[in-house]
Length: 194
Image (cartoon, helix red, strand yellow):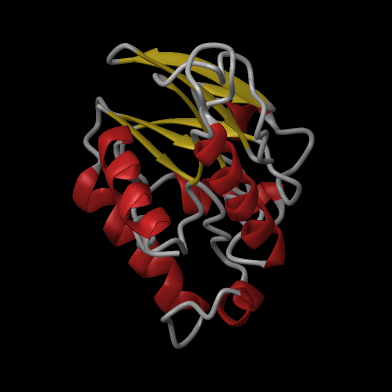
């Protein structure tokens, strides 16, 4: 099973205030994220982490990554280290800036940064998963753009507008890695109500 999530900011106390996260302090947040992760992810599952994973020195990453179940693929964010030690690198199946996979007949493009017009983006079965913008003004701009794209989609040769924020603070993510089906369903309900 594949799971996806972005912008966990494990260890980042300021993320609590920035996102209005429902945690009293960074230890409560870290513990909740680890508990949510391990309640879903099994040892043979893969979690695609779309950046801004851990707010700590690279040498401290094993402390946070070690307890997390499953195989991990990191798509770097702006707050992730550019270089990793062999110890940390070996904790991941891959560390990259952009990743494309196929899952259940769907083409998935993943990047920390939103790419509204992504490769294969004309297809209704292609999705761009991103993070970075949290629930900021930039996210509002992207939502308005997406509404315009979807309203004007006329079929083949026009963008699908299937770009989805998988930031952990999104209501359909709830600080928990989610499957693509869960993300698509949760995003659709959220998108229609905003």
